[in-house]
Length: 150
Image (cartoon, rainbow, N blue to C red):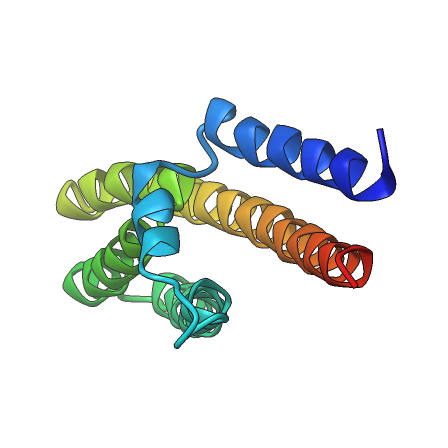
């Protein structure tokens, strides 16, 4: 097996693991299908925007949930935005953590909200690390394929 084939195999195994561990769902595949020659970095750009937006939302959530008088509607609004953006890129476990978080917001359960915030952060950093690795591997494979076909 040559270097490119080996890289391709590793990349496919890694990608499959993201779906098997339910870190990503079919929405990510649909996102990939929108990428073409006219927008070769489409998925990377969309995911990068998700990371920026999520970082901001997590900071807003941190502030909102540590107020003396928590505005649960405001907290729920941030969680709703995070749920929507994570759904749009296929970040399955982040989305699921947001669903649980919203239930605690509705119940005005401070302890539940605090636990869910930690869970959302954990899942967010997991998907961020996994996707950063995914894009690095994709780039290595692309570079190796181009140099191998010359």
